[in-house]
Image 1 (cartoon, one colour):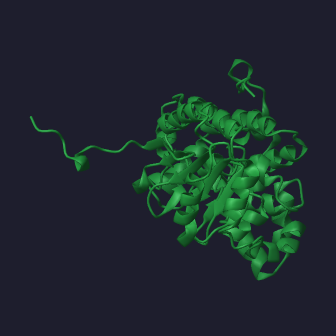
Image 2 (image 1 turned 60 degrees about the vertical axis):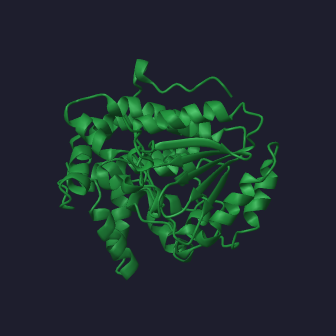
Length: 363
């Protein structure tokens, strides 16, 4: 019996290994733009369990396989199938994912994320909570969940609520894409490094000593960075602040309708394609996040809302239109922002008793 060839042995979806002083975590589903499965979240948790106490490892590096991006998000198709049969994948996956997001945010060693190419949804949760977030000229970062009858989760409400002015509200409700400098401006990233220099930066990080400080990691990254700090969104922030300062979704829509400018009308068109219920829930979560004192508070609130989303027709309809049938023509319920009632929204914010999200006491 002959041994299988190297080509015949499939690589795992998550590769974790030590290279020099770096604990490398590579998302390895390039054909799916590294969309993350429940097992991958669990494997990342296991990798961090090994890397955290290892004295030979000075920092973590998150990267994605392939040329298209770090991560296109979570395995939304699997969540759709489970939701259809009233399964429990949402309850399990989001619980473990959100706990991992929090762990990344408070990880005791420098955590570097290479946010090259597409970075969406769950990919944001794995990268934007890190201590050193590197974007490139190829970065396309977005939280497009409202287009799926959902809302920006994985701690997205915490991140977006801390962007300048109403920039986070704009990105959260429209699902529009940030380029690298936009991500710096919105506080989702720290440095723009040309993609052509990522390999050299990676080599520099691998050669750092095991006891490296966060300041030394930052200095290493800055040695390759362009210094860009703001992108196209900064130029339109005054308009964004004017339209998105409202606390009610119907008021935002009304203000945009009254503004005949091309930018206002194109923004209104984008909002008209999103789930009305998803936008109302997202806006309330974003406003509550502004008052939150920690990422954990936002994740607890997001988890409550996510379980209600999982039960909703809008989520299944949004995924059907975007991912399953790909007709891009979701039939939302209700179909207008003005028809979303407080009674419809209340369950997304209700305490959930024994199912509440509880974080690891390890700090």
